[in-house]
Amino acid sequence: MNYSLTIFFAPIFLYFINKYLKKKSFLLNYSGDNHQNFTLEKKIPLSGGIFIFFYFIIFFNQQIDLSIFIFIIFLLGLFSDLKIFNSAKFRFFLQFIILFTFIYLTDLTLQDTKVIFIDQILKYKIYNYLFVLFCLLILINGTNFIDGLNTNVLGYYIIVSFFIFYTNQEYFLLNFSNWFLWIFILIILYLFNLSNKLFIGDSGAYLLGFIYGFILIETYVNSLNISPFYIINLVWYPCFEILFSIIRKFKFNQSPILPDTKHLHQLLYLSLKKKYKLSNFKANIFSASIVNLYNFFIILIASLDVSNSQNQVIIILISILVYCYTYFNLFKKISI
Image (tube, rainbow, N blue to C red; front, side, top):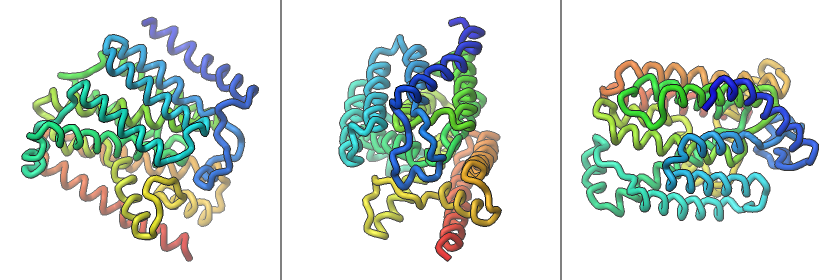
């Protein structure tokens, strides 16, 4: 691959594709849903998933099984963006079927989680498959849940992408040049997202959750020096976001898979906008930047000793406590 040409033409290609989509009023974001009110009401192309799809299809073209399922996951997200698959329950059911099929065909399993009772359960293949399925479902849907502010998702995965390679060069699914080209593509998408030129949509969120989930599982399985709790630290935010949201929604008798406007990043947005009288755009960007800056420091600290499970667990607990403390304080302020 000619990297200089890719770097030069990627933003130009993005610009003209987005311009064409806006002209044709195709694959645009604003549908009037409540959870979309945290972005500008200007119609913006949900085109980020398209570029993520093509990039990884090219890089994983030698892995036929993975490429096929990247395509299927992309289609599921695309149909969601186009409001063809409008039912959240139906999309979740399809995710379950697609991911279980992928896990079964590729024999994607975990053998050692450092948690004794889980490791005993994982000795049974079917339970191992279901555990991996649970992890992928949580990450995919958690990624979609945190995609409520500009750059929240793309900024997070730029951080994760850097530390994935930084901490584990002995085993890696993509070579050095390809991975850093991918980080560059993410940065371009980030800048377009920052300036309201594109959103990644459900297709982009589903793909990022699926691809990073697969990469992290394979990286852990084939590495001797990485604690499984470090992997959790890399993806703690989207995963805890959805787990916390499920518990919260059950408490208020709401569907755990339907979108709402009470996620941490949305409360932070409302708080900053109210307190400092910020515009929608400024409150949006500042909120996402605060979340990403916090996650950068958490992952940085975790990356200082990736093999120490005790330290990794402490960092996870601190992250959860900070999240809960911040959430309940913001919730109280917004409710007043």
